[in-house]
Length: 218
Image (cartoon, rainbow, N blue to C red; front, side, top):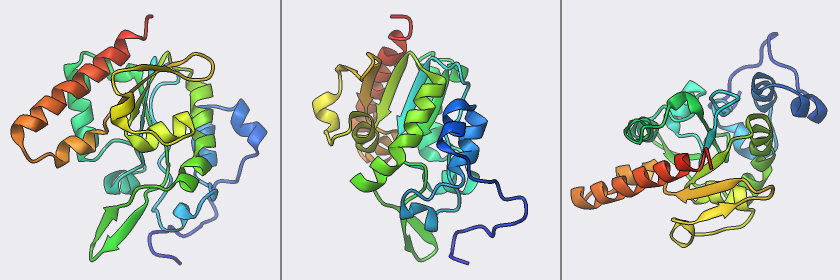
């Protein structure tokens, strides 16, 4: 058995057809994602990490990919960056139950370094292969606004590469008119060493989330 993969047992979930997934629920979508082999990332990740939240959530937040903690737990935004996100979301006055959180890529891409697994950015092919799953989440949840956190999320949602600095502060409209706010990924805040700079960027991130939430009723 390959490292990081769980042995298949008699209770392994069956694959679902495209039609079944499109007509189903978030639980059925997660079941289908668990059997995904669209790109090679499934070979070494512990498990798929589907989106999480209420189907009637008004805001959908799209991150980049699961981290080490998320890969082990099978849930998005449970590691250090996710905990910081939850803190800032609360500061922004945004009800957590009204936010659906997910990632552009559903499997953890990493490079082993001794006992550690270091994050590696997904490439364009991996992002594009996983975009179908994100599209199904968008159809099922149908949020009022999207928040794209990080370049990988932007690449998936726009279908082309773009820098955060070139899009941040703008309201982008996706096909169908859905508004999207572009911002940093909270993991970047954790990497800023200078305390003053970190606080400045934290406030900007808070403002981005507030702006996105302000579009929910607009």
